[in-house]
Length: 416
Image (cartoon, rainbow, N blue to C red; front, side):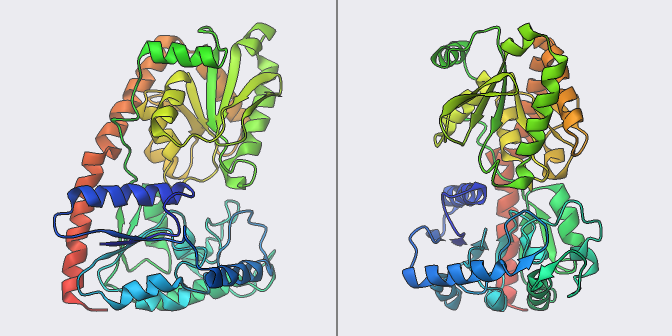
């Protein structure tokens, strides 16, 4: 197996790709698994990435999300395509010019392509604009589109993808949520393709409820009292990535403060991870930033310390933080949207706010504060059971093995 991804360690897609690397290594009895990434980059290719990036800036579509042109291929990827007699290929996040759109026809038969966002069936954007109800990825992009200025890369990139992929029947695509499965299957690029559901695996042996002693000790290190009510949220890309909903959470906290007594405001504490270490005040609430957490065991401890984890994202292809939190038996608050609907069940494992209403989000937070400890415990147990039954390694391993076996059959037939 050759696993291809832009990175093995940078970003959520890289983490997911590494999980499948580990998963295949555990189940593989017939040879080695190789990983191709750009973590050690050729300087010549870096200049090509810069060129591709700057060209993308000649378009303005008011969609504040990453855009990728993928005009160039990383040489080791194309080299791996040349010798296809022995190895299957599993392609993950291939952006930042890991694989050029012009080389999509070179992807070997029987390859597996995992979508970590919507880029493959959209234009240059990694997620289709939330407010755009024309659904160009379903109905077709046109070169002239209202509110798109400059060179319309979305149309150009989409057109090339459609020409290269829409008629191929020898590839298997996987997506991590039912929301993405529906959108991929309805897209012009992939509607006639073999698209399957394959969620990201959650290590439920690591992400689990921890002992009261560990929780108390960790609270002590952060100067937190047992009477405090702790909301936890991830700050990774929050201010840089519009879709992570940092602005919506900020508005929700501002509204929440108005409905709480001074005593309760002092009791409510915020903890964020993934940003810069420090302490601050957010609309009257004491906020502790614990910084980047690389060890999953430390992250599990943080989830376990929290009374509730907030995921204010406008779009999530899967919802890794939500799934990990619930695996630790900690209820989640999120918007009723995208891949999060596979993970959080309203009033069973958490609360789902109206998309994308800060007022509704603040109401859910208030409801969670007013819940009894027992009610939150029941929610956490339900969430834990759901994650174990749907997303744990044994479950995803069985699904992955089935897809690999089907890919081998396609490869043996060798048709396009």
